[in-house]
Each structure stands twice: as structure tokens, then as C-alpha cells.
Length: 408
Ligand code: SR1
Ligand code: MG
Image (cartoon, rainbow, N blue to C red; front, top):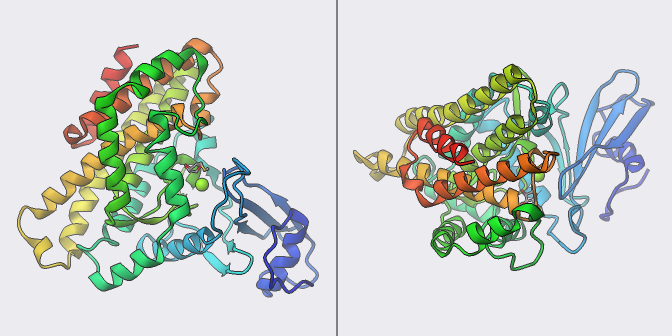
């Protein structure tokens, strides 16, 4: 048995021995362990180890120095520590909604954690046009609790500052600063993926719109300088495992202290991608209507339930004396809601013309339908960014979606 005192990037056959060495009691001695690599993210390696007889499983997630999406992108493996630590914090703030971390190994930069068995990656489920009735309830609870309860309004300020220090995450933040807040508007690193039939549209609507650039610049420096909440930092449907009854939120390696609207806006954008896919790909009219109206209802509910839970939690848990001043919570929430709309717009745009696209759009086979879907996305996104102060409740999102859809 190796002693794992020096880092190396594991392959699937290495992992059973590794788990035995780190968690001696997890599998019985002599168990027949099977191991496979199951990750499909852009950055890390995810292994599942299974006891062939009992079916018991464990997940090992290891950070490599280079990303999977590009060998040229070298990232600090400290992201593993950040991910393990935030999962432990979120488990306390939003019990049951994140997988349990059994152990974080600083040498191997590996997290040994609960397997989210019986759950499907949400993007995969949405691409099969599955409906998840409890999602708006779960995600709004997760966001209200993990975001508000890690702010200065609800935390001891010195303890919060310790968390800010511990979650400084420069490499992963740089990815977001580039991929979300810069490149989609200028292709400055020449790695955008633009769907050729939409090239002229993207140039005119995104690369040449200076009014838009100014608003994106404001949002970029808000992202970089507003240490408001301990955010997940990459809250899209690929960071969620789900079934009809339960939701797990995971993969928070982009976590840092940033504006809470970054998480709330991200999930809304990714729900809208599901709508685009359903609208373009579901042939049966009744099925299409069922799936697409559930997505819209979910978008509306996520916003409205988040607001409701945020307000209740604010009343219950605010600790800062000045944050209790009449009118302050409304002022604070209004800024969060404007950020939410702005970030929804940014995420919609960067997943369409940036480097890291989403299958919801790229798997739309019919060229005309994909062109239409992307134009709806960009039109909606621009309204979300440019008019972000007008998005105050779920209905405002539905109205903006309707306006964008009606144009194409
Ligand atoms: C280089 S990583 C590309 C994207 O994948 C992650 O999930 C983040 O969204 C990142 O922006
Ligand atoms: Mg990820």
C-alpha cells in the first residue's frame, strides 16, 4: 500500500487502494472494490469506488494542476481545500442540501465524500426534459441561508473577515473574471466559441455595444470588490444533483467572498437554458408546453421564494445594530436583486458566445432553431444587464422572457 505523502494525479485503478488507506473503516477488509472515473466537468477528476457485493459507494474528487478543458490553464490545487471547507460550512447552514465530506487530503488535493446516489446531474435531467417539482423550494432555501448567513449583517465581523481570508481564491476568480466578465464582449483571448450563423449578430450585439460594455464593467468590479457573502461561485445546473424529491448542491470550488447575486443570477440563467432546449427540441406540443411552463414557473418561484426567505431570515438573524435600521433591509435586498438580474444576463451571454458553452444550446441540432435560441438568450440577457434595477420579483423575469421570445 502506498503512503500518499507525495501528490500524484490518480487513475481509476489507484483509487480503491487510496480510499482503503485514508478511510480504513469505510469498506470491509477484503471487499471487492470497483473504480471508475465519472467526472464530466471542466476542471477535476471524479472517481466512484463501489463495493461490488454490498453496492456501497464513495466519491473521490481530485484536483489536477491543469484543467480538463485546456491543458494550458494551470490552476492552484488549493481549490480542493476551498471546496471541502465550504461544503462543511454549507452543511451546517443548509443541512441536507450538500453532500457530506468525509475527509479532505491536503497532500493529494482530494475530497472523499458522500456519493449522491439516486440523484442525476440536473443539466442531464433537464436535457431529458425531466421536471423537478421541489427544486425552487430547495434552491431558494439553500441560497437564502448560505448567502445571507455568511454576510456582515448576520455574522460576527471579525469571524467573517477570517472567512474572507480563508476563501481568497485567485485562480478560480480569474477564470470567472475572464470567461464571464471580459471575453464574451471582445474575444480578447481569442478562445470564444461563436456559432458561425450568429457571428454577425454577436459582433453587433455584444462586441460593438459600448453601452453594454460600460454596464458589464460596473458588474465586473462589483464581482471583484464586493466581499458580501460566501458564494458558491458556479451555481449552474451541472453543479446540482437532483431527483423528484431532493436536491444536492455541490462542486463549489469557485467559492469566495463575493456578491450574493452571482449565485442567484447564475441559477436563473441556467434554468432559462433549459427552457431554450425544451422549446427547440421537444416535438410533442403538449410535452413542450408542460416542460417549458414548469421551467418558467420555477424561475418565477426561485426569485419569489428567495425574496420571501431572505426577508424572514433577515428579521430573525440580523445581528449588526445598524443593519436593523428601518429601511436598510429593503435597500440591501434591492441591490441583491439588481445584481441577480445583471449576473443572469452575464451568464446567459458567456455560455452562448464564450469559451465554456452549455449543452442545452449546443445540442440544438436544427440550425435555425439554435440561431433563434441564441438570439432570444442574448436579447433577454441585455435587458437583464441594462435594466437590472427593474427586476424586482419573479414576474419581472417572466415579462422580460416574453418580450425576448416575441422578437424572434
Ligand atoms: C475553465 S473552467 C470553465 C467553466 O467551467 C466551470 O464550471 C466554470 O463555470 C468555468 O467558468
Ligand atoms: Mg464545476
